Length: 78
Image (cartoon, rainbow, N blue to C red; front, side, top):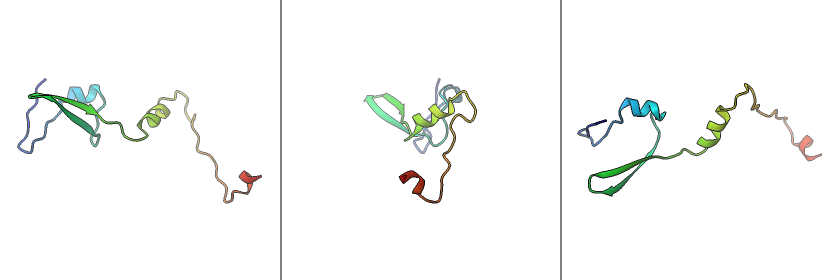
């Protein structure tokens, strides 16, 4: 696949690659220069991304339930 560098120095990843790898707007990438003309693009992982993906992959609906909180810590300290 080919892409073009814009006048602002931006490179667009072709849609088939974005779809295939679930690349969404706002995700961060690192660019490494390997040698003249060769570069490596690596998606950086957002903090907590692993946990969110793991929770979303749970097959049972409502498997993860938010804890119920009380107004005081008295119950916890007993």
